[in-house]
Amino acid sequence: MWRGDTIDRRGFLKAAGIGFAAALSPGSLMALERADAVYASGFRAADGSFGVATVTERGEIVDRIALPARSHGMAWSKATGRGVAFARRPGTFALVFDPSRQAEPVMITAPEGRHFYGHGHFSPDGTLLYASENDFEANRGMIGIYDARDRFRRVGEFDAHGIGTHDMTVSDDGSLLVIANGGIETHPDFGRTKLNLDRMEPSLVLLDARTGALVQRHGLPSSLSQLSTRHLDIAEDGRIWFACQWEGPRNALPPLAGWFSNGEDIMLLDLPEDTVVRLGNYVGAIAVNRRDSIVGLTSPITGAAVTLDARSGLVVREETVRQAAGVAPAAHGMAVSSYDGRFNEVRSPVAWDQHIVRIS
Image 1 (cartoon, one colour):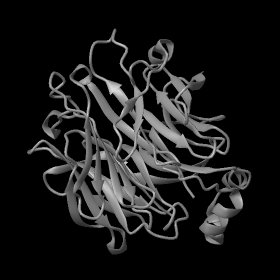
Image 2 (cartoon, rainbow, N blue to C red):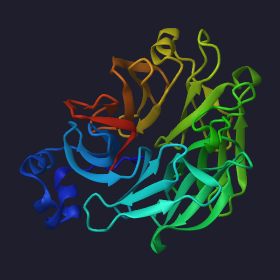
Image 3 (cartoon, one colour):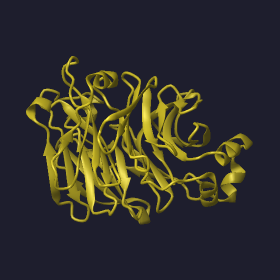
Image 4 (cartoon, rainbow, N blue to C red):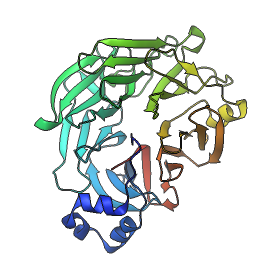
């Protein structure tokens, strides 16, 4: 996720180069020149094909790169200017792309016996890519390690100390891997079927990024064993925000978000009942805007976008966004996409995938 540095049209165009600008259509170039921020997101086009798009904060599509199938999460390296689109679970590809098109795309394939869980993150210097993976025969989550200096060759792996490993991120100093183990058992033979809803084991984990040693592991109380810990982002003060999806009875009102820090226990957020209902017991994406000290949550189930104060956890804004999908920091507030093609102010003939990332 974006770490607080702003990007303007001049910065992006300078980094992309003259060749990239010359290749854009007049409309795309005009959109980029007036953009306050630039993002990347996966999408499904009207003809059923898939891709990853560069998109302005208003929602205008600037450029597209084809993908072989549907993507899910995105990773971005500020250090190298490259991004990664991860296949939707249980997909086995991840595409490394350069939005300026100065470097050719690189396709990563999950090793035999593994599939990607849809998320990953770069080390701060951009030399390593970490990816959440499923060792499906052993029913354990793993973090695959890929060398960005060697065409993303897989060079190692760490045990994620949980099952259903989903989102993961890296501390600002690169010393810790932060992992959300959703606790849900799956196997590619059964597609996306959840195999253990009566015995889930959600957890939040910190690993030493150098050795893979377990630093901290938080399980949830037995009364919340069906609360799948799914997505993460980190605030300026190091507080780790997480968002959840409830797999239990529909009439329950579980906590859907919370935070923790290294050396501290988790704090589950006591959102107002109306807000929990508005989110439909399902937070599909979370993002922190460090400059504005706010946290954005979205739910496609009920079409909701909720903004929290990152210091107090109090709700500061609630909006209805039909089929709300991704959320990421904007120049002011949060940028939100949707499955029906809306990205902030503009609606395009695409279905945006679940996550967006601000690129810089």
